[in-house]
Image (cartoon, rainbow, N blue to C red; front, side, top):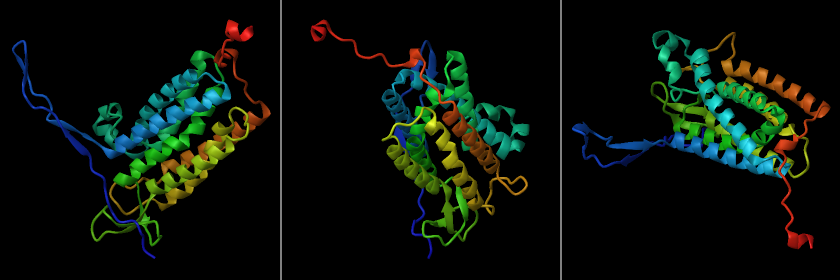
Length: 296
């Protein structure tokens, strides 16, 4: 059975702007004629906002001050985007660095998800060190919210089809996948598959949170359930198209990252259950003060 998903690609929405020349102090400026809202960027931004909002709500439910988690999220996001680009260059396109060293500064030009994970961990550790708090405390609400935001991010990958897979007759393959040279064939779309993973993980996390869990539980569980899926999905990546992911001893960089991520999840799981963290007093949400009338 061939794929049931027809080929499509969402294009950016062009927003025109007034084009009249601006003159200030004898200097003339030509404003841009407009700008494009790209579907990938819009969905990624939506994922970030959803993730931050849900992380704060989860923190509130755990009795952790939500602004502390939002602050940690800022460190995580900034570091994640920087390292996502750096790792994408170093692991996937090292030859570009030799001809254009300034490519490292253009963080919008290519992202690696595992580079983002590395950056997230480093950002979280920086926040924890600066504010003298156990990283597991502020990291747990962020990890719980991650699949909900990741769903939108991977939908962004799917609608622009930037993760082509191998040719297939799987029913969820994308027909006439426009990559490489025609004739086009049905291919796996790994962005779609990860969106399905994120949806399933979101449902699982929403169910697990109905019972009390130790702090750090979701921070440990997240890598445990993501790494194996990502490791095996990368075997479906296209090898016959321009810009295909490089292989080192038969594995992609992300597969090596998945192994490291799984090991970190195992270590975190042991630490959470052997030495569960507690919320420091300065992060505990103070109870609402009683009014004099209520005390009377």
